Amino acid sequence: MKKLRVAVVGATGNVGREMLQILAERNFPVAEVYAVASGRSAGSEISFGEDDVLTVQDLASFDFKKADICLSSPGGKISAEFAPRAAAAGCVVIDNTSHFRMDPDVPLIVPEVNPSAIAGYKKKNIIANPNCSTIQMLVALKPLHDMAKIKRIVVATYQSVSGAGREAMDELFSQTRAIFVNDAVEKQKFHKQIAFNVIPHIDSFMDDGGTKEEWKMVVETKKILEPAIKVSATCVRVPVFIGHAEAVNVEFENPISAAEARAALKKTKGVTVIDHHHEDGFVTPVECAGEDSVFVSRIREDISVENGLNLWVVADNLRKGAALNAVQIAEVLAKDYL
Image (tube, rainbow, N blue to C red; front, side, top):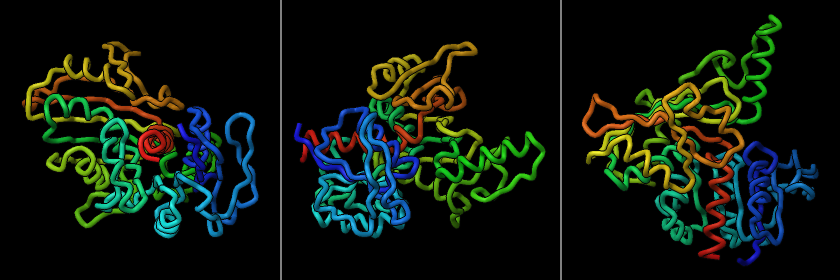
């Protein structure tokens, strides 16, 4: 496989650091790696693999003609400004922000679900990485959709604070400490206390009463998997540092048993089934942190509807929910297109 020049934009953030780590772990064929971030971080150093150290370069002045692929996670407004510039320079941008996801000329990709759609990147030289919760849900649902065709999904998410960035992780830590030592609990990143609490509000509210995070799960599922699927989502922030969990209820057009679903999922690349009917027979975010798989547990039939199943789906949101998915897209690009 040809070696490629890779720029990681937002390299000093949670996801950017994971991108660099995963590129090294998976031995991605790199000729050169550039760590790129805002001017505030320019000149600082960041690790790449076990032995290499990269000097962070300023996004404002970085020449994207030096890169073949850009893995991007700097925030939506920043991506909106720099990604077209990078694409025009001949660099294929794999963007982890929400800015380009619903652009009809930008493919929205989960490699285990719709890899052939990557070919559409040539329209704008940009590929979008889906929302973290959408990714793990669709990896689990794709083989079941192929078997019995999904009509409707009702999902409740339990999303870790790392999905809101490093400041959110710091806030969970500081609030937890404050409660234990009887200090005042300070709120900065979240409007409600996050320590020992759950917050049914992620991203901004929309006119219909839903949140933008919930809207993302609806429209992204339709774009990636099937436009006719009906989706209802409730997205909740929970006091967990890493790892998103989802309670997923699915209604199918055709009959499918829990046993059939379990067997299909066990054969699915990127999925690990741990589903035993005892106290340790399921996966929680603690066990999934640092892992690449989407874990599926609690597979059971929903007797309240015809052709219904319930699933418990857990994944590391910084890895499969963001950085790993982007690197897997880059691997398909490197193998089949570049």
